[in-house]
Length: 189
Image 1 (cartoon, helix red, strand yellow):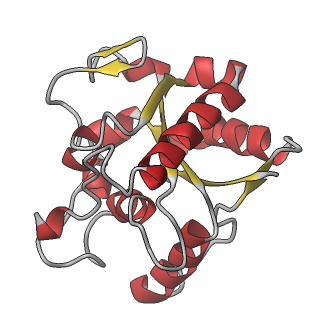
Image 2 (tube, rainbow, N blue to C red):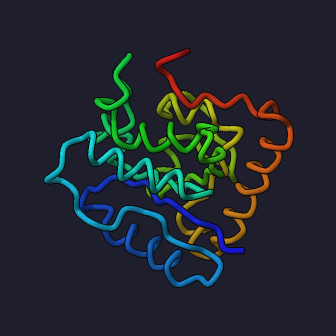
Image 3 (tube, one colour):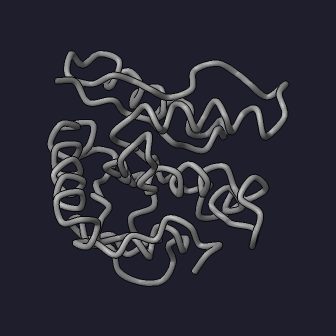
């Protein structure tokens, strides 16, 4: 059975080549289905765009986040949240938060964080272990649930990381949602 994947990333031009490669890997696999939003919806309201994204995330079982340098620096607002205001929080925060929710129409997604090789020193990444406080809060609070992998390692063997993430998802579902302390909504903490 194919794994449906939603790819979350910053739409900054500096990421275009790497994101295209991620999309090509998912699109070129017979065991993966790309459930990412493919059409430009910038002409729609935020609420309409979010409905499209919600449907894509709800239809997927694995979210792949490409954590790029711009998300930790000048585009960090995309991973920020606005207290009590989900729609006006950062787009990537919303995608990750929605992926971690156990909805009635979708179980919690597996989550793979593909860390750009250029920033492993910024987030204290060491062989799949994340240390330090430089991560955005939604990622730091869920770091044990997330499968962390460098971009180059993911490109070399995407199925390994996706299968690990799917196993964590299954463990979480089987445990009655108690194995990992998942925080999907910083608003209600």
